[in-house]
Every structure is written in C-alpha cells, then in structure tokens.
Length: 201
Image (cartoon, rainbow, N blue to C red; front, side):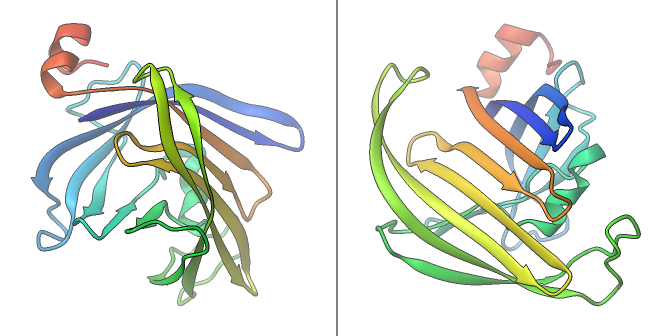
C-alpha cells in the first residue's frame, strides 16, 4: 500500500515547511531487521519512489503497529519524539510503555551519545468521524504518546482507524516545533502506476 499525507511543520515563527509526502509499503522484509519489520519508505512529492528519502521499517504483526516516522531533512527531530504506535486491542484507558533504546546524538539539540529513552502511550478516546477516503463514518481511537527525559521532552498524538491506519498524527517535538500529518488518500501499487506512471510520485 501507499499512503498520501499532507505534512506541515511549524515553529513559533509560523509554518516552516508544507508538503505532500508518501509512505510506501512494499511488503518486503526490512534488511536491518528481517525477523520483525517490513520495509517502508517516506517519499517527498516529486521524487521517484525507487529512490526514497528515508528507507526504514515498520512492525505490523497483528498485535502491534509501530512505525518509523519521516526523519530526513527538518524531520530529524522526530527521532526524539514517540514513534507512532498502536497495540491491539485498542480500548479507552489502555496504557503501555515501549523501551525505545538509544536515540541518535544531536549537536543541534545538545543530546550526547548514550541517551536511552522509553516511550509511554495511552488510548484517551474513541469516536466516529466521516472519512473522505472511504466516504462513510469510521471508528477512530486517539492515542497520546510522551517522552520525559532530562534532555528530551516531547509528545505524539495519533488518530488510528483499523482500515486506514494512522489518519492523523501530531509530533510536538523537543525543539518546540510541531509536525502535523493528515492522511489524504491510500492506494495499492497497481493504482500507483495508473495514477503516477512507473513509481514516480
């Protein structure tokens, strides 16, 4: 599947970047974690899908969906924000913690080597809303994620639907920027070729 997102990154000075980005899932094992993760890629609009900005992995095993967000360009800061995650079954009030491990060091954010973090999550609400993609009401869960560390404080808010996945995401980053991602469309690889040609987005 390929998912089309509207992405907007802003700071206290206003919108810094606004673009279309595609999440391409090819169903193959990710080379760095063949036992647990599938290969995905984040592709900026106008780029060829065969040469993505960020080739990475996703866990989708029936119990958990755990997604590497875009981390290229200004989105590098998402390394220090809870990654999108849903653990099933989703019920209001459910909480869990993910031992993320070590984050990348960052001179820009004054984060040295050896910083280990945990991501905390809670399902805060369940609701219905109209989906332009499916053209009917869909059931949604709102999930809050947060990271509290002496050097890193950040938050992720996700809205998840069983058919479409993460339809909205908001990254409240440790550098005070905010990234909003809204799902605009989804389609399979055959539809991608029909719409865009040979994997060119």
